[in-house]
Length: 278
Image (cartoon, rainbow, N blue to C red; front, side, top):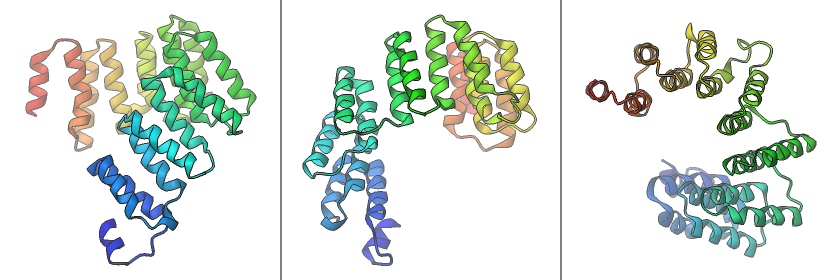
């Protein structure tokens, strides 16, 4: 559709329109075709948004060399350095080359680019993965000092690392903070809470949180509940949630894979085969 609109001149494309089509091409046809398309975009519309879209797709496809190449091209074109581009590099280096993270942070400081919530979330995760819990907490303190409160996703990352480090009390305290004063009013956090309580082995808490969702569950909550019950070896409960889910929605293979993973982890191969047949 976007190709037809562009070719027939039904719309006067602006840079964001070209960027949207570029994103689609990169996702459907790969980075090579995306780069070819960039060359066809009128030069007046080949701005920062175009190159950062291409860079983000390089990061999604874990192409370190190409992402760095595009980042340097943006510098050569003298586009202003943005926190978006820096975060893309941080995401890439978190997976591939953590030693380079310090270089990005120094560049941000030199260019006076302020960290975003995502920047802090990435750095928190890197410290947690390195088992540097004190360093992780220091980043949280810096984040708050900069006037940014950790969101639910960031708190979930923190809880996960506290659990891995054996700091159950710190994890529980933060989980209660995530819940707020009224879990029914903060229901959107339930899908994050379910697997985290399961990681702590707290089946009563998983049951309590699921009860908030159970009457009118959302798909994401069902998937989280199946994962949680599976971690606790509560197969009957996981299956009950799946049956409820299958009656309410037309499930994709991705949805079914959550229960399949539970069966695989418990070596229940026949149940897995039966589910695939369904």
